Amino acid sequence: MDQQASNASRSSLSLPGLIASCALLAVVLAPTALAVAWLAAGELSPQTIISAAVGGSVCFLAAALALTTTYLANRFQAPVQGVLVAMLLRMGLPLVALIALPNMGGTIATSRVTSTILGVYLIALVLETILSLRMIAPRPDALKAAC
Image (tube, rainbow, N blue to C red; front, side):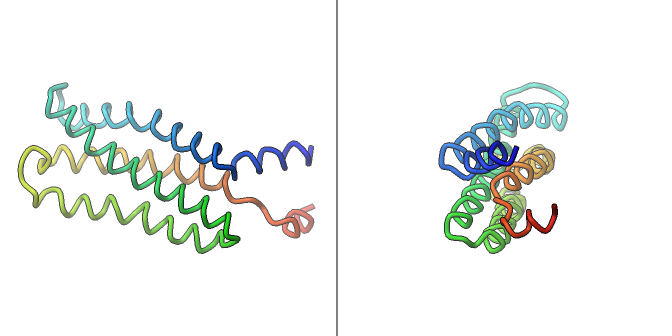
């Protein structure tokens, strides 16, 4: 059983594991963004598609950067610092978008886009947290203490 857990831990810490996590994130967030934008708009229109694209892209970029930061920090033996920087990216980028987009004007300055970002962010936060926790390898001494 320990060998199986060790192999699973190594695969989630590898570059293909990071790519697979980002792909899973994209597969989940794309339909989520469309559904949230549709709920916010009450109709399926070109503006809804734009809202979904903007909201989903902002949240995907923030989550993918957070996952990449967690991966790199684990590689450099700094998992706690990596999680803290990842948290800053995960929360900071959507917050900056929520502040900046309404001031830009045009079709992306609508409340639908901000509602979409907020809705997709909640789903992205849960999924990205689960994927990040899979990347953090438990320390061997912590495993022994738990047994």
